Length: 309
Ligand code: ADP
Ligand code: MG
Image (cartoon, rainbow, N blue to C red; front, side):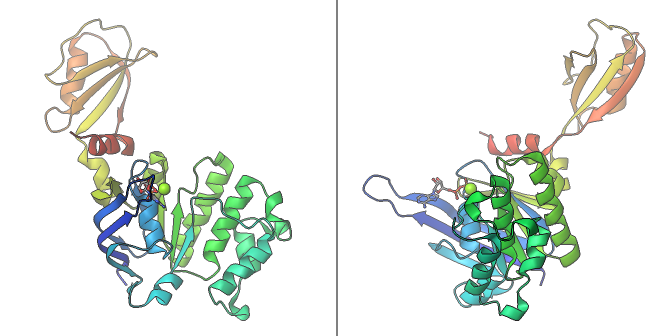
């Protein structure tokens, strides 16, 4: 299977009621997600990320379009397409009267996992909840609840794991624990991972491929490294051994002084080279103690793509 998910012309219109008008959340989205990847779905609030994910998971009914999960058309084989995917939702919706162990057993039952195939203890261990197996959900901390949601997404051994904003408002320790788990599931079990996140740094670090959506439409989809290469801007940060004062730079180079005494020279890779920029600093008659480059990050790509006129 080369693509874990194939989406064509996906539309979603949420019907309005008396007070709220109808809302077109997805305007004909096309998206393929390669098997075995860690795939990031990014976009500003209200872009349609959760809607897309919830449609994939069979939790929200699409208005139009085709969705194939693990090769199964959602409309033709709804049961198989649901079985291939596990979702950790954005909302913390847990029944307060179940223990983690009970919640996993119920979830396994819902997915028709026979008793002999259940891996409740193993999954609790994976998310670090073994010693809370018998605690009531309402006594669990926010972090533990999130880990339980991850565990619930795994009970039916899905090939595809979807995480909707898993680290929003989560402390750094839990965040690292979640990412360690996700990486292991990807590397050791070949699980395809799809995640949405607000933290671009996180997406840049975790994801092989990224799709950015805005207002229900695909803006760009590419390998993370290609996205980063799309930006032409580059910054050279030079630490001079003395204040050079005003000095001449090639046309188009932007000079900014930083509080630590270094000088940031931002230029366009296609118009100027690093050696030309350095030569300009040398010509000012000062020595250079240190020099480093700053590559554009996903934040820059995001701003460039979602705020274009
Ligand atoms: P994201 O996850 O990218 O923030 P969502 O998919 O949650 O975006 O929402 C996309 C759009 O659809 C938003 O304008 C949101 O207000 C609207 N929307 C989401 N869920 C519902 C719903 N159940 N009823 C009506 N509108 C909704
Ligand atoms: Mg969302």
